[in-house]
Image 1 (cartoon, rainbow, N blue to C red):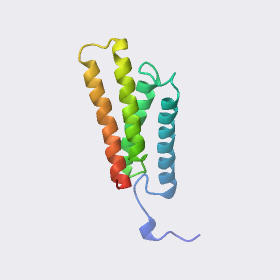
Image 2: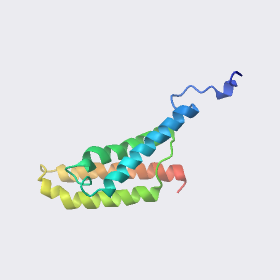
Image 3: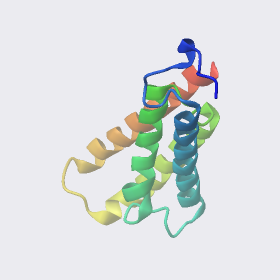
Image 4: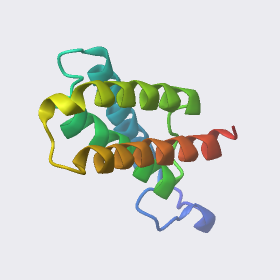
Length: 127
């Protein structure tokens, strides 16, 4: 077996082809979870998977794509998610009777998270 050339010896945890593939598949799985929740009206609610799975997945996709220059979803897709999520949030949050100030603060965090992923996507895709 031939030894790899030294310029192929990368030291980062995601530099090898296998690790890079794993990262891409992980991001694809997170995106699939996001889309599955958006597509299921029973799961797409504030007191179900929207807050406890979907939003953490959005943040993880942004984090992984930014940190490792991995392929994020297209900006248009992220914009669509952003708009749909905030529409649902605005329609449902008052029914949950959150404490004073929570509604606005949480909405800001959601907005910031989607804006982050959208920025990463625009940078990556050159849009």
